[in-house]
Image (cartoon, rainbow, N blue to C red; front, side, top):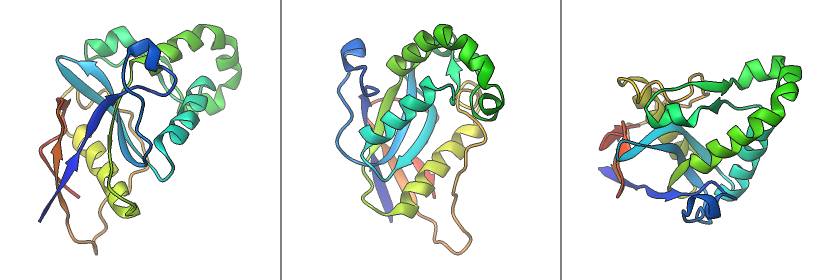
Length: 189
């Protein structure tokens, strides 16, 4: 049996609805895609899950961006399918707090530009935790296996919880009114 995944969006990053004229995120939880506009569709930067409402999770994401914990990308490059970073977050950021603090005033407008340029897509999968984890993992892993720019825009090194050997394979069919580059019609979880 094939389970449909009805992706809705694009939605705005919370707090940027007036800037980008997109609808706010729905009041739900589940799986989301952070994307950027590209070539008549959307390049996926990251898939994520939340067991809290999307708005609560994205408030945490905003705080992490503004604290230098996440990567800050060059938006002009992204629009051309090229990944260039103004700031590398994650482990680098943890070990270079002083550098971030020195550059904070220059990086803050770039961070806000990135948040304003994100286009979010969401899918409601109910409350089944493992399905959320397996969808997130399958999306990211299928992106990593494709040609650039689909494979080069997403962050690498995410903690992903793929199908375990004892779990049955689940087939999902991705449906969306927009083009999500690199997201196949069928995913095997």
